[in-house]
Length: 130
Image (tube, rainbow, N blue to C red; front, top):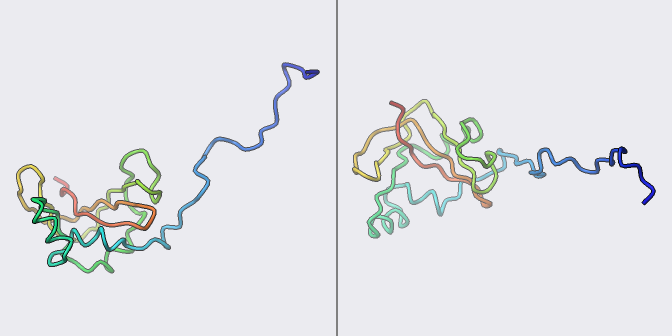
C-alpha cells in the first residue's frame, strides 16, 4: 500500500521463451509404431491400406535419415522437437515415394516432414520441390 506507482516491479521470471524445456534432438528416437505406416510390408501399412489410406513410403534405411533431425524448416507455430511440432527437411537424396492424397499420383521425393511427439518422431515423405 505504501508503494510508489512509478516504481518498477522486480521481474521474477521473464515470459520470453516460456517453453522452459529445451529438447535435445539427439536423444529422440524414431517412434516405430507411427513410422511403420510408411514402411511397405509392415502390419501398420497393411492396416492403412485396408482402411483405404495409401500412405507415402520410405524406401531407404531409417538409420540413414536419423542425422537430419533438427536440420529443416519449422512447419507451424510449435518449436521443432516439441510434441506436435513438424519440420520440413530436404534430405538431398531420394528417401521414398510421395503419394498425392487427392490424385494418388506417386512421385519419388527427397523431401520429408518430421513429426514430433512426446514419444519421439517419425518421418513422412513429402511433396517434392518443384
